[in-house]
Picture 1: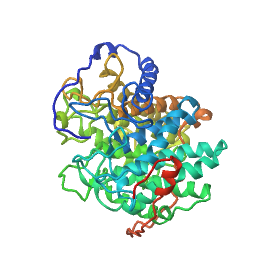
Picture 2: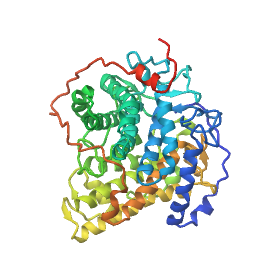
Picture 3: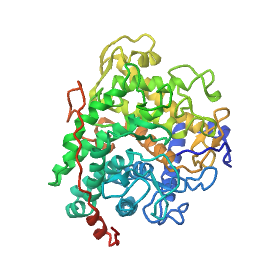
Picture 4: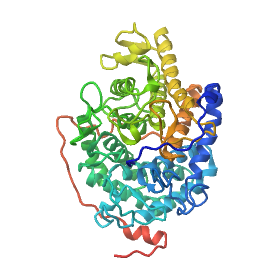
Length: 505
């Protein structure tokens, strides 16, 4: 989302009050506030989404300075994936909203727009739509290639639950056509440049490539599960993973390549990629940048450290202690500030990493991750430390404390009513930009959930979302990438007849 305004949102700010709230109490209260905030931003029944079609997730109720009263494919998919995870974990009250989202996406896939239409799939790259399910025709950074991948991931997670609970027919006839279109889009368009998740850089985005790889790996496993095929998944997943290695420069992830932005490459784009491709059953795998991998931990340090000298709210905070995190240091949007969702993402990666480390029962420190671990223990050396060692105990406790610190930063600058804006002022922490940002509330809900899960016993940890399948599947030779393009047939007829919508040629 992007605009060219520099105004303050009218929040009732109360950092002093929130500073006296215990972190556990904050998490307990904020979990309920965040979930209700998300539901209020979904068309049909949402109190702040009046005028939006059922199932359409608005980015924010803000209509001026900036206007985010649209439905973005990416934001909506990330939001509904969180709802699906909660639903799978036991909150059955969310099923109606999920079903309405499914219906809404089937309709939106058929809407011709400035990016194209469904005939060749190009219209699936349109980043946002009007809340009444019509095309947004104004100028924008398009196409964006991450939305279809994220939508496929959300719908696959929901479909897996349906399959396990007697819903095979619904999955094959109703949801698979939507997923299939999205997977075909990823397979056909992944190697073309497009705008990144911040909608500013036209090039190749690490976040986009990472979520595309996840979708293709999951898509292949899911297609086999329901007796379908996904040729794009089979042929393209290895090549996307191969391409993903191009972003690693040996020290951190260069988040955008093949672009003309001139940025230094350190971008929260890469931290978000790590958490949205987190597989709770995976090892600390480097090529897929799992949260506990040496690459991902080194990148976490590089990205978060880059914001220490640029924001006044981070003044005099040493390395290894949580800070407010922005998008990238060259950011000028609304003056270039920390974002709540990127600060929460820094926490979430650490919670994810801690889970994976505890599952493995070892902490592995190598030359790549050593600087990260030295911030937590200045005397640690490279090596493998088992769960029976004091170093393991000290390091896991330090990671937990470090992750909690990022949640504490958000707590410190959360308004008294608990709702989150997009940004907080780099100077004094006052909330800025769009109010009640759905993605922010979604990130807060996930970070809270993951913190709680990390504190459970090992026997209880399966409350985590479904993993994306072994990330080792489709491991290619990394000597070179070969693009094997195909022109799929997109499933327009199935979608229209399912929802009894008329379709024009």
